[in-house]
Length: 304
Image (tube, rainbow, N blue to C red; front, side, top):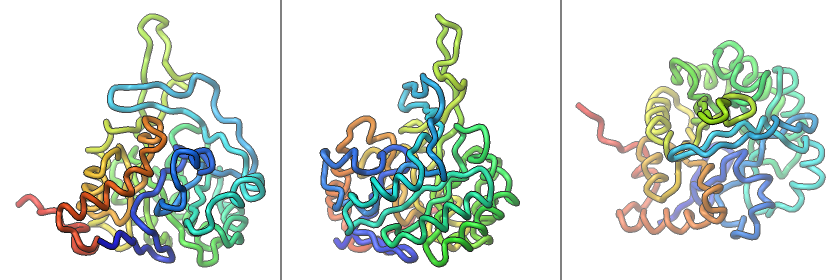
C-alpha cells in the first residue's frame, strides 16, 4: 500500500513519528537506523533558554512502563537551530516541540522557530507534568489553553500548530475542543499520566521530584480511549500516542481515528524500534488488505 499520510501543511512518508523527549534531537539515533525513512521527527522540547532539568534520580522503571521527571532539559532554541537542526536529513519533516511559562514566551519561541524553513510544524507542550510552572498548568485550564494556542498560532504565521494534550484532566474532549476553537491545526495525545513509585527500604520516592510522567504499554488502553473520544469530538486531525511498541499498536490507534502516531518509550527499550516499525506497519497493513489509510482510519465498529 501507499503508506503516505497527509496532514494539514505536512506530507509524511508513513505515520511513524518519534515522540518528543524520547528521541533526543534525532541525531542521537542516527546510528540505529536511517532517519530519512521516518514519517517525521519530533525533537526534544525546546525553551527560549537552556534548561538543566530536574535533579537525579529522574527515571524509574515500573511494571509495563516507566516514570520520568526529566524536567524538559534542553539546549535552548538558539543552540538547536545552530548545532542540531542543520544535521537532520532535509527530506524529513521536523516538528519542534515548544515549552514556555507564559503565552508571551510561547509566542516568542514560535516566532523564532516558524521563521526557520526547515521546521515543518510546531507542537505546543501544554501537558508536561514534570515542571513547576508552565506545562500541564496550561493544559488543565481551557481558558489558559486557548490563550497559549492563539498566541502560538498568531506567531507561527501559517506554520502548522499541533497542541499536545494532557490526560490529567476530567474531560479531555473539552480541552480538545478548546484548542480547536483557538486555531490549532492538529492535536497530539496523550502525554504521560502523573504517577509515583516508592522504595519501601529507603522509604523515599524513586524520583527526586516525588512524582513523574508514566509512559509505556501500561498506559495504552487509556490513550486509545482518549484518542477515540477526541477524534469524535473535533474536526482537526489527531496524532495518537501512548504505549505504542508494535505494528498492531499503530494500527489500533489509526482504527480508533488517529491520522499518525508518535512512538516514545519503545525507543528506550530498543533504540532501533521506531525504524523497524516503518516496515512492520506496512507489512501488517498489506496482510490485512488495507490499501489506503482513509479506508481504515476511524472504522472501529461501535458498541451498540
